[in-house]
Image (cartoon, rainbow, N blue to C red; front, side, top):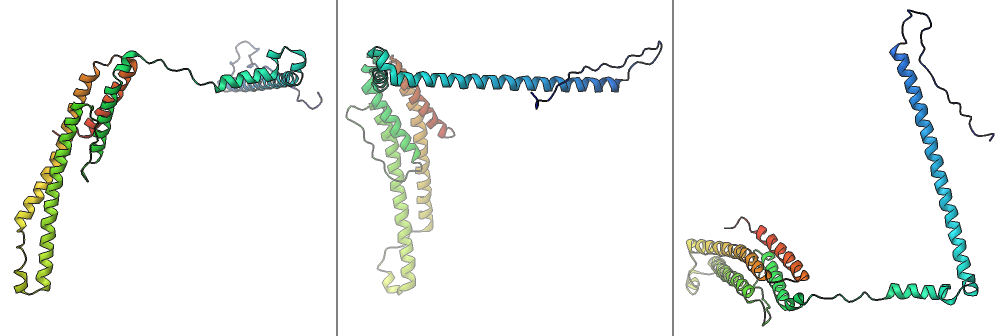
Length: 272
């Protein structure tokens, strides 16, 4: 080709002395020769790599064109020259039927069938325990909706948390009532005469208010402590119950539930 560059491969050799006793070639000259040869080898390798890449792309292009031509011929001429079952319409319908076919029903293990109701109850218990632990500090009394045939062990543990929360709410309500009454009396003292102030209840002493405030703090700590204890006991209870689950899906359920309970226990790991 006229426009292609002409490549001339040259091999440089270090100069060798022709006169006996002459000095050998200097290291700098030898290094320069080796650097030039290394650069030529890298350029040659790069050129060969690009040529292989072009040949590969060319083969793929020809293969695509060949497949496209075969597909077009099959689409337009298949019904004329091929048996009906190999023509495009029937083959396409078979592909659509296979793609849209529902998956085969999963065969359930009898052991999983026997523990399905119990596993559902344990899952409900873990879910409600998670909600109670997430709502700390408690903001309002949570209604625990447990089915009649629910997991009784879990029901008793949830009731402990609800009971502790209710004691906290009562103590908090009492503190709010005391602070509200004191605030109202302070306002009346500023607005009304001494005669009228005698009609109102006496103001709570500061030490009584502080005592009630401390009681609220203790009840809040009780709520936290009960949650920590229930989370730890729940792990043991679920392990005991799930030891009887022998089905493959049951064992997976047990592992998932224990992992969630471990996360709850870690949330209160610093609580004694």
